[in-house]
Length: 308
Ligand SMILES: CC(C)(COP(=O)(O)OP(=O)(O)OC[C@H]1O[C@@H](n2cnc3c(N)ncnc32)[C@H](O)[C@@H]1OP(=O)(O)O)[C@@H](O)C(=O)NCCC(=O)NCCS
Image 1 (cartoon, rainbow, N blue to C red):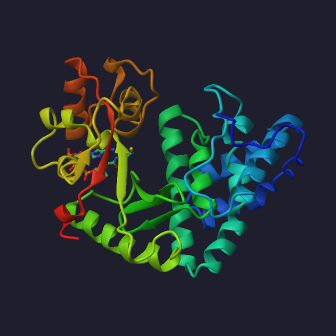
Image 2: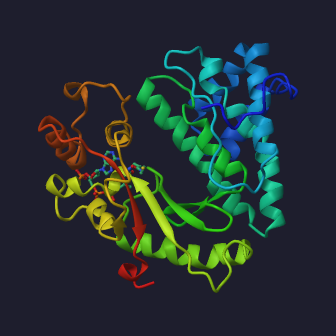
């Protein structure tokens, strides 16, 4: 996953980050835990010329594509890499925060929204620590959407500008932090998005073009109906979507996503080592033990099911 980086040797390296600045940005803007902020600041000491060169390419890929859609493909740190490599992607993302703030200001997005967008970094640092038992940011590429101004959090949900310029669409994403995914919370978020995007990006979302919302997630797997209790918000969320057929979109990543998002464990964790601390985990574990291959599914939001 290095396709979106400029070729090696064509751009300057990332200047070595100032550890105090890293810590301050993480604590004051990104909602990071002190433990993660400290680990990220300390890992700066391990950045060698090779990592800084890669960091420079990562940073340039963001800076050259401000306002771009989706996220950029970046290399993922190998499991077991030294701390500096496990945090590497974080530094160009933090370096790009001022670019994001300028971009947001330019389209009239206020600072509260900018801060909310960045809170996801603190969350994913926390999640990394639970999954791997040590600090790092395995999904730094995900934040290329945040700092390029492609993703916004409106209420419970995040909305990322996806699709093409000719056929833009909203990708709907769900953070782990932020409370239950109630139908009311979903409705409120989508209602906010219907106002926000045409106001901030009138060229992409003119009033005459109906906005479409898509979601790709383990939450949409219809097999969940066999395992989760009827009262589950996850099932109610799934009912809001019409699936794009399994033949064209059914992916084996579902297993990995379930391990990550339900159990906060690495992809290869054996079933018998997964925690069973709440209803969701117990229900999903029963399915896994029965041999269910949970899937990531793609669905289109049926707005009328929300009355919108
Ligand atoms: C999506 C999400 C917010 C739904 O939470 P919810 O509204 O509480 O969902 P449900 O009503 O279906 O489930 C409620 C039960 O599951 C538990 N639960 C829900 N999500 C959980 C999670 N990610 N990890 C562990 N337990 C979870 C709750 O504690 C509750 O258990 P209890 O009845 O024993 O108290 C939640 O699953 C979550 O945070 N997921 C991680 C992020 C994610 O998966 N995003 C999509 C990525 S593609």
